[in-house]
Length: 387
Image (cartoon, rainbow, N blue to C red):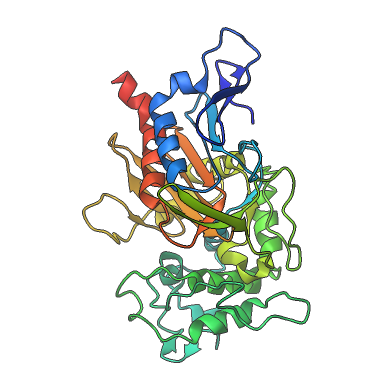
């Protein structure tokens, strides 16, 4: 992808064996390369890749410029670094798009954050200990509803599919509700994908459109996110160019990669079905946090956090996570893990941004700490150099 620095484009790639540094292109011979300007981020990316998948990439920058570093490969047994304009499945970063549309409905006066979900979806969240008259829209957005943990998997846990292999959103919600509540509504935080499947049903009920169409027409198209897709049920293709996704395990120097399972996007729907790129994700979160997707009042609601880990300076808002950086700055974003990919995007209000992907879904030893260290380094490196 294009990396801009002083109007000069350049991208840096670390070879698949992490042994060679390659400058993919640099129109101005005198231009400094991204690895020269961002050595700490380069080191953090190398450390992340050593614990991550076949490939890893970070697209980062500030209000004036953006740059990309890539390690490894987007296709095993080749040397094809992941670029920042390549498609991948973003998993739970979809939740932020879903939350944005719900907050748009709040802005329009058709939904109230503190109204019970039963007001809009009567009879949906009920039975097995659930009472939709006590669970609010806010509870669902913030994962404080008490809904049980639900992680659909095409090979392990999934609702009964339709004859064509697609999944009904309502059936997916019922599958998640077959597990008993973990807490009373509002009493605690439990991350459950089912919260956002219910919210997908809410969007469909209030807009009269399938959720993939509602999010496309309300967010993706108005922001001009040309490489972001919410695929319709039955559309299992990954647009090109794309980073190939894998399942895998890495223990020390040992690793094993196998192609990710093909699945229908309707299995993940409003909680994790979307496809995007590092560049488009950056643009989306920047637009959202700048108040160009929802009103200022709704953005303030999204940024009211539940301190899931008190004392860290972070927390969980309404479809947004709050992160306290080492450079005494707050960043906002979300992560995503779905068959084939593990990613996260963070942005700050002063224009800094960092979006990371690796093309594997880990069976164990997921490198969460290395991912957060990489994001923190990219967002804080220039700040520390200026101070």
